[in-house]
Image 1: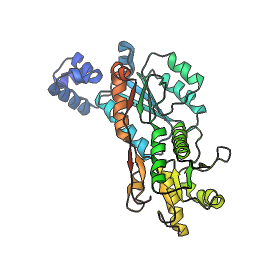
Image 2 (image 1 turned 90 degrees about the vertical axis):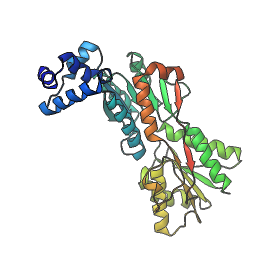
Image 3 (image 1 turned 45 degrees about the horizontal axis):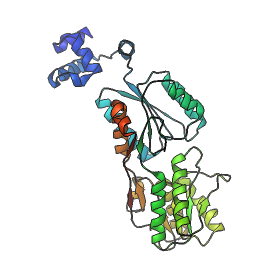
Image 4 (image 1 turned 120 degrees about the vertical axis):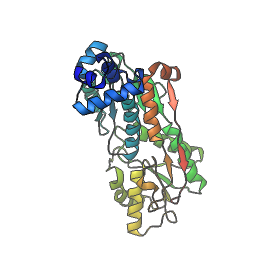
Length: 327
């Protein structure tokens, strides 16, 4: 550190501040120190700093999957905002397996993070007990639980599912199926399904859920062919498919094109998420667009200033129903 201080013509205390609390150092000095660090290839010992300050300057995130473009937007907003404040982000995924969340949390807590982000809101008693044992902020994202563990940043998946179902009903559709894919560990998908069921009940229409939890199924784009071989073969009167995600909807549309089924003429299809490919002219998908990056930025701000976030408890970023060419 002394070599960096000498090259930047500052004291070692200033170098330490640039590394730990850059916002407390003038821009001119901060730039000189950063330039010296780059020239010397200096790598700070964060472990020593963490022991002396009782802060690791690391946050952890446990996500359901990294194979999702909208989650990617959230992680980009989260990591870039934390990085700008001088923090790092440790990331792990459960692949929608609730049993892995506790193991993932134990691994992250061993690194003494300054806070945790969770994309699930359904937790085992083991996870809840672990989080109670540590005095750090916890932010649950992509959902608005009725009783957050600490802070929640997201939107109502139930209301979004309800609104999309009402949109399809408003288009004159009477036989609407909810295509859920594998919902094991996906509490957000279940809430969208519940919103769909409520909307159909209000319209006095029977719900069609496919596949059932007992059946199981592939997920994502691969579900397209299975929908035609399963759901539509058993229920040929179906004239609209409300898909749990844009990926599932894209798979359905691809299979519909292969089979010569017109969308939306023969079959209306909707998605969920705002998946980049689904917005292209080749699919032109009606969907619920989620401000994924905004969720990440708001989550980072909640971690950095938890007391302000706790005053709100729940931060609702909303969503937008975007009608395009598939309904």
